[in-house]
Amino acid sequence: MEVQQDKPFIIAYYLPQYHPIPENDEWWGNGFTEWTNVAKAKPLFKGHYQPRIPADLGFYDLRVPEVREQQAELAREAGVDGFCYWHYWFGNGKELLERPFKEVVESGKPDFPFCLGWANEDWQAKVWNVNGTHHTKQTLIKQSPPNTADNERHFYRYLKAFRDDRYIRSNGRPIFVIYKPFLDGIPQFISDWNRLAQKEGLSDGFYFIGTAENESESESITKMGFSAVTLNVNNRMCSPYKKRPFFIQKINEYLHWKLKKPVIIDYLKSSNFLWNAEFDVQENFIPTILPNWDHSPRSGKNAIILKNATPESFKKLCLKTFCGIQQKRNKIIFLKSWNEWGEGNYMEPDLKYGKQYIKALYSAIMESSKSD
Image 1: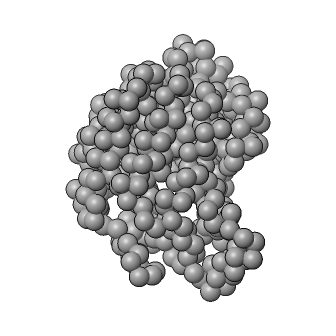
Image 2 (image 1 turned 60 degrees about the vertical axis):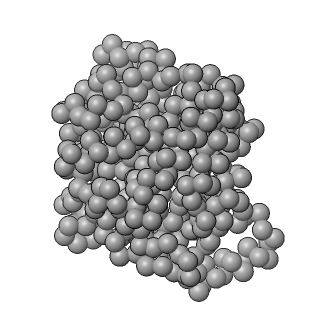
């Protein structure tokens, strides 16, 4: 599947954490999935929308192929062009939550474009702070730095996926997102995978996309051999908070950490920072659209919450972003996320909004195409 250049090409991040695995059973109790946190979430202040209950798809299990088909159908309805499946490769052949994507590859269904993102970080029990980073409580499993032997093992484990006609490519090169580009061994990983891609006749190499924590990291990432850079938008999301007067920040930090008060940021104010005309118009910079965010199912009172996130406010952000990329040749946009329910960051229907987010995105795509 080749990226189109005549309209926004939207790739939605996809979380496979909706089926039990032995490791989660050991760490969190038998049967644990992301739904465990979602279902037990409680409102933390007046008007706080929790718990968020899925509507059309219910509390699904991603081992069920019909669910994956329904997700793809909803994504098509929204105008999404493909999924970026997060995968978790920890080194020495160890991976977790791999079953849904492998079944997609093996079965050939759903017939919906995809690429892979490597969440190459430790798994930790953690809470989020006001800068969009986290304080570690406990490391559950370590991420090993890649080496050539393991890079080859990793590559060949997914070679069938890279050869799949559904795999998303940019100028013939398979797209592959790396969440932590500065991890030790990543330059060697890039070199090894590009060599293996040529050896196996895939292409001249991969279209590697590195995730930056802030815009200043962009140049360093491209110098490492990445084709493009995207942004972990948590820092932009928190910009209205960080731009408050210093003493107000300190008061809020005290309330957040000492008195366990969530950080609450208005979505409309946050969305003013989610599109950055200086950086996002660059050909090798891929912007992100964010429909909502509420980390309280995972972090409780330590959460960051975007209040007043609605389909209407999301549509405004989409229109601003689509308008901003009109003159770009590279029109890839990441949608964060399709189904991160534990972070209150999803497009799938819930009991409050139904398909309104899906309709908002599709409407913004249609309106922007008319203005071209």
